[in-house]
Length: 170
Image (cartoon, rainbow, N blue to C red):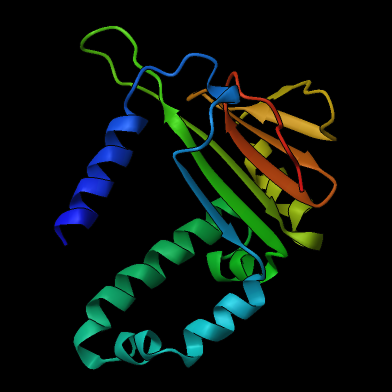
């Protein structure tokens, strides 16, 4: 356990360093999902799903269902449909950019999701909350008020911190 804590602290300290040229830095965290349908199937077959169905967790399930309904209203699809639609997904935490004292330090991220036929529908919902921008290689792109860029390349949706590039779209 002590080594796990030390490893976590080393990763955290690496993440909060000043990131010059963040796009050329290796990610601090890299999470890949290879098949959303299979992931959902594994969830339903797992002990965690059985625990989740426990009557003791009914209030938490109710809150999640309410949040899911709000998500569906805002984005046009429910989160479970999005998760099941994933052909592949990859999330990368590039690092945290240090800025002026007393201000928030933005996190540099890149998220890519191949959502198949669901991608245009989800992007259309996201586009309602942003301003259209031109991004080389993207079919369409928007930037929101937090400087998060969302782009669609075919069936792939990409979210990235402003200043990062599309990177390796796989």
